[in-house]
Length: 150
Image (cartoon, rainbow, N blue to C red; front, side):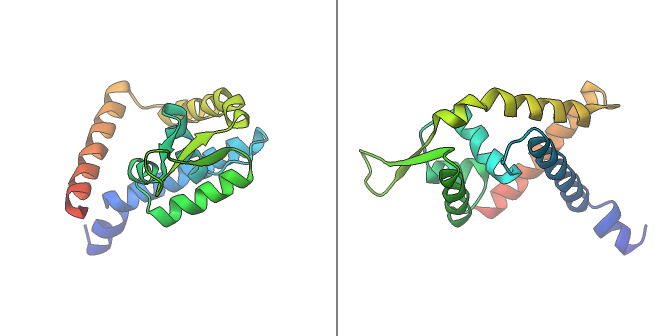
């Protein structure tokens, strides 16, 4: 194995990045083909709001592992599309709570079905045990970096 194999072809960073780009491309296409004007980045916010509506921008920033500026840009776009709305927090005037609109709630099941379909496509030819091992390993790598970045 030469130095290029180690930093490119067999590098976990390269392999995860390449896989991530393929997932983003596939999911973006599935959303567009189904008539949804939702990007992968916007989806990462929506799914956390579907799980728990009414989060602060800071909570979304932490859970989505995105900086505040990126969250603000995403929320601005989602707000213009009438998918989310920001309401000042009654207990902390410096914060906004982010809520899903009725429009976003109406297409929740459709978006989730598209994601589940994409995940089934990704699982083809991979055993349950292999997928569980992959998830476990990726989570360990994330924790290692998260610990170093705090």
